[in-house]
Image (cartoon, rainbow, N blue to C red; front, side, top):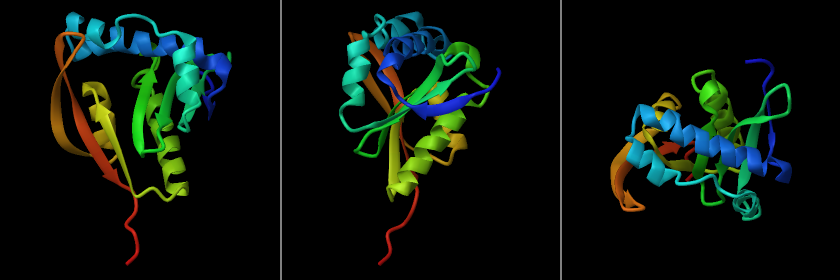
Length: 163
């Protein structure tokens, strides 16, 4: 992969990010989940308004772009200290793009003096978050569009409040 830049979300990114999410789940998700599970997780490509609405709710969204200014990954940090999305196009998984995005999110959390981050991570994201110092709290089993699936509640302590 060529030069990588991370920047804040722009409304023009919405269609690309919908495609990134869909491809990540439908392709890379098959490494750890069944076809039925990935189809329940991402039944269709989301519309651009879904991403634009998310961007307006106060969360920080960062986008990793390639040398052609095309988004190849994105991650977000909700105001509730929850990392909701961290998805990469299948061809950049394992290249450090997801780790770089996470580092940006953690840096922003530290600037905001957030004491703890949490995430509900799929199998692949769980491996990344463990490398980044998260602790697995519990495996979560749930039903999504009538299909049983699982993820992991994970947390990372960033700083301890002074007494």
